Length: 195
Image (cartoon, rainbow, N blue to C red; front, side):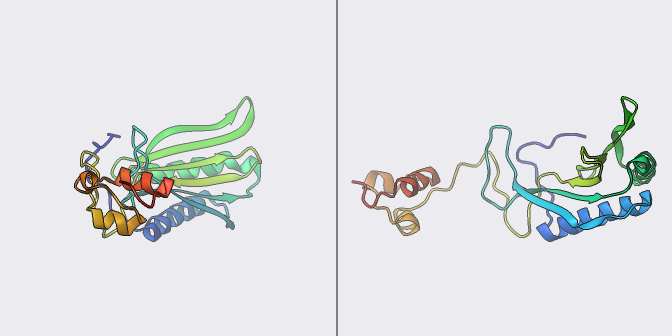
């Protein structure tokens, strides 16, 4: 799987569509594996996308980590991951990791990725003996927001937009070059007047 460049366009998908796809994928894997999911155990976790230098853009981009569990008996886990593996291979996923046992005990793990979408799926035995089905998405952009490029400078705010946004009064020298960072600093320290 190739890593996209910092300014490559992100796939566009709403949070609901991403969660619906993850739900569909985990349900399909479970059905193929012949196991029943505990729908009350669904854990969708949305998080910000964080760049290689810990940068976070405030344009709505996100990642989804979605998990759901099955209380299928431990001795059935190897057969379940075998069946899920076959299904994923037929759908064009690459199998990145696979095992049925470790140290003579059932400890199933199936990791797969899809190059076209860069989605990662996992089926694995948990330490509590459950069978977990999970999907992790790449960084996605919700519609219809514009993606800010990582190489773009932060927006420059006028004195009025900064003053109205945070109630700060800026000196004339700062009024023409105030950045989002200055506004955030002003917010943090709650300055009412900067002269």
